[in-house]
Image 1 (cartoon, rainbow, N blue to C red):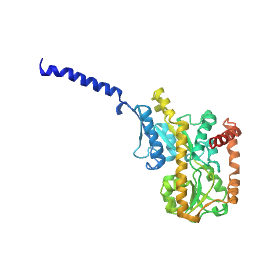
Image 2: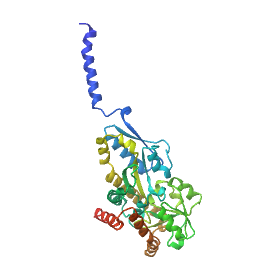
Image 3: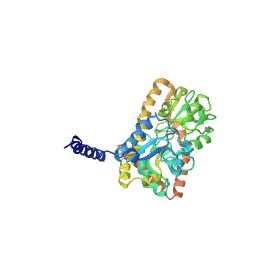
Image 4: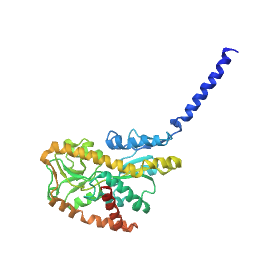
Length: 348
């Protein structure tokens, strides 16, 4: 037998071993369905690095490499076109606040009202349940696949100069507003509302385009604009909270096998909603402590009198929401009671 003939069985065995190894490996990159994520938010922000990016890794893991998510090198669409970009297939996955498209998602305004977001992680878990029980059946977001619904930490009143202690202090001030509700109410109180995304906030504050903003502490530090904030009035439960989504293009979702869809939903929905809200909460607490240390007495909690003024200013918004919700076929009183009961139960 020649040396060449002797090597053939060995070579066959090696090739067989390689074949078995490859068969046991996750799908190769070229076989994977790659989903494009619209990266409009800073990639280094903890909501991305500690939240969504880890979720992307989980997607690849639970689908054994058959589905992967790739963050775009630059925004595929601006924040106010984020949702539409997923419908149109410009992006496959997006995350962002509902309030960047005023009037399009009126039901979400309920969870953005004052004083109800003591813990964003708990509220986000309750919000997903509210979404499944009351909002989704109306057909809301039926043009995409909804993978999470969460709220951000409750917002405070952050000023370039001294903190405000009453509604009178805000009159005539130019304030960047984060949601349509806040914009409407503050305008009624004599404030000049200024629209602008978080990515525009640094310029707005540093150049004095606005006198302040209604925002949670962690976004001030997360966007590194804290040096332009010299007075904070903390509002327990928040003067507002942002409602946010994580969505996927329906066509791309349909390309995923039923088995992998189920695996992705196991790590999404209520789980992802609570994770994102919880990250907001823990980072907000840390940011608040930093502000207290730096600002001293210029970091204050709203007085009972100021809280009463805020409550009075926003008093008509819940009734307006109930009217809208009723028109969309929702038992508004039941929905509000459901959300509050879920938050109370989860807080025990």
